[in-house]
Image (cartoon, rainbow over all chains, first blue to last red; front, side, top):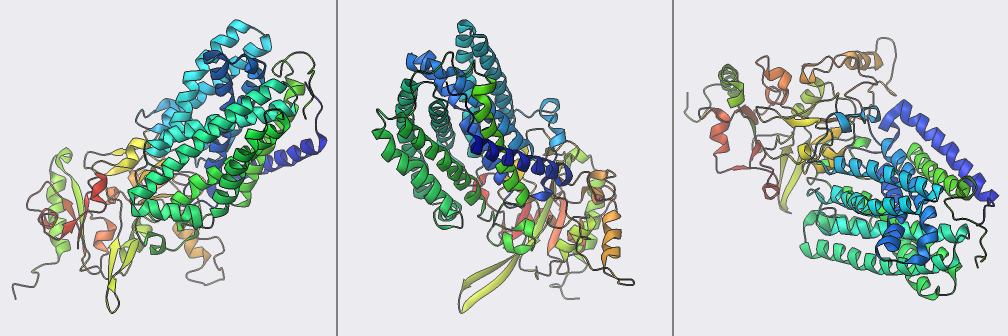
Length: 376
Length: 249
């Protein structure tokens, strides 16, 4: 295992942590007033970052499912790392979404006055459950108790699947937004989460030189998941297009030719799908290339989440609504504020710090003994 | 007087009907609104009256008036669509709220408990009419001119912001950090006015008498007759929300 810390990346994470401090102070002073969100585009960078890190956290579920259900023994040494990465990503996702609430201090109302009809309440429940199970799994890995590891790994599979499903379900019930609603969206979210969770673990495993065979094997799984994701996303867009609802088509136009089209075409389609699809089949004996391809998937996923969240909202609920009353909070365009960029940089910096310091702080989770093979 | 002209202002009739409705068992009352697009002149008086009545902050609007162009040149027309909350019978905003901060009251009005709302804005995304706003906490006094003697400067705006928002009959106090800042907000048919026997401010301020309000369970009520009109329609009926706001096209 490589416990050396890459100094330039560490300094970069410090800049991110400083940005996080700034954005947290801004949230405490201005709440959502410091954002550029509005009533017609109520969700922006906070939700994008939440969904991004929620996706990153699925590596723990993927490795658990592959080792416990499908008996892929080569991935067993990556279990601790995957669990640690999931914990870090979940904490980052939690910070991103909590700071996006107008009244974050009332989050206890999730417990005091729950609504079982709300997908958000179920998402909260499963988020808490996934966090708890990940923590218990990490504890079991640190104790090197194989029985406990197996127990919590099994528990994490249904809990994790429910959680990633509810994230998609959360959007699919919003029938006013044609692009979001529909039964394909929850499946798309589960597949996307497994894809980028697996990509993150692959990249981290290569980076920390934990397990060469595991990196190659997981790279193959990521490749399969990427193909499945491309098919599902194509299906999702095709159904929207064929359905022909005016709002859906308008949202699809925003997605493909609106101001945020660079995120869809450049980041998501080119960097996050086309390049990895080209690179991954060539990584059979090259874990380094697999890791870089996975890093591209992660970067592309940021674009995918932006393209999913923002363009769908940039369609007026009623024609002419956006020009009926003039105010910056009543517009269809959205560009994040400094505070929102700071939050995004902040949680990314926190995640980077966590991933950099992981091998040093939690060597038990990264596997025992020195790594014999070097990353290429 | 000619039979084609109204014998009394519809407001007087609606006040009479309101009095009748308030005398009834309140669980039997269902409020409804009818907006006659042929009479609406697009003056935005209802939007301004509503904002003033509910002490809405900048960027918060309950009843914007949408301007619609119809036809193709040279046969074009212009009409207006005031858009309050539809007070749906099957409201998508209610079921998605994770903390039960919003619900339908006995009279069919969707209300919000500001003290329970966590400001997640899920209800904003769920409303297919864009009828909910988030209060991001702006102030009219920000960047407002201030000079001694200026009637409409910061002093005047500050006085407005210090007034108590009357919504839901609670003392929300001076506009600042507390609720409803950070909350979802929406039209509530001016429940605080109804309770004291007054019609919603958008109804009383309507210059063209294009907005009608009343108890739709009362067969003799003006709104009951209008809802039965062949001109009556609701927005997005295909979604199954069953609005209590009707338009006369």
